[in-house]
Image (tube, rainbow, N blue to C red; front, side, top):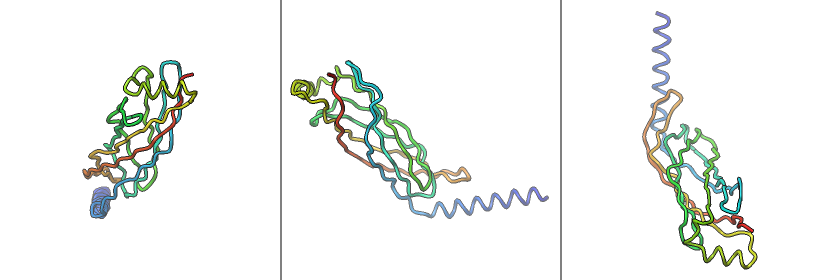
Length: 165
């Protein structure tokens, strides 16, 4: 009988907690571009990670979210990535790493800009990243309850990426 009472008490308590959580309005998370880290640069490609910080102001974590991106030089797109998954911790900050492999031969849409920069002795090229953090994640509580929501946040930044010498 005591176990049944304890189980019912915990069930009611988690239900009250979820009801209080479910009535709290959802706030979109915020995203900040922190930079990139060069993993490796060779004569054929540059492997790098674009680094972002996310802040989730909600009392629950976010699952089932993803980031998509496109890279461009002078408005000409040359690389895309899609549906890179991430989760956000409740009421806190999360670091998000977006990997990219920039293969120099794939830069043909922006070849003129690349060649011009190499011939003029420049060591880097400005690459713009357009990132879209989105999804239809679920808010989840400590009791494991999920509530579906959706959001989309766009972020555009430019980084100076090393060129081959």
